[in-house]
Image (cartoon, rainbow, N blue to C red; front, side, top):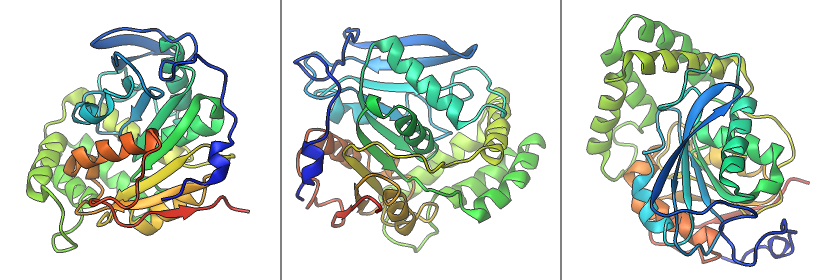
Length: 321
């Protein structure tokens, strides 16, 4: 893989001589959780502090059913290189309930509040699924805060058949039909049997089913509001994307955000690499967590991401004219 020459020439915000902490960044050791508020809505950030950062902090924004603890396995590859920040944004995880009238723009500003609280000027930003929509919006609104951008299982447009199902899922949640909706969501998020080889398919299916079926009353309330939020706000807006190194990826057998959809997402950026991870579908962060951690680490430290034994050949997608 050859890095496009324009990336090397990109201007960088002024900062300290040692990368990783960002101008004025706080410092710490071990794991720290911080309670924050954005627009009056409480939320929680989690920071795993790196003793000797070699790159900018990693900020990971997961999917709507993930929380700040869903990415601890990936820390093994990332923490030796930089601080790792995860967050339960308002309306998700252990944060406060967020009404659906507040959408992705609001959540993007909560991301900014998180970085301001930690004193982090710029970050290596990874967004997965719904977190990708928030991450891209943040990058569009605050390009000076993004050093590198990675989008996992991301789409420019929500699939019509998915949005058509949302009203029915909301009714099922309201009726307490947790088992029924859990089965539907597993079928929606994971590739159908026979699509192709997927690592840990049975185990991840069981894990996902339990996660959906065992939601608490408050989690169900948040899920209903999340679905309302999806229908009430634009998932993607055609604002300029930051001119930073970018990587878009998905599982090679992803049927929710298929490779063609990921490639179309890459075309919305100001130049991006696109690849697919072998033996994975939309749940690749769980199915191939070690490999994803390695890929993130490589991309954010300027190491080769092509060829890799766990990825199909990478393609560079230039910025649209």
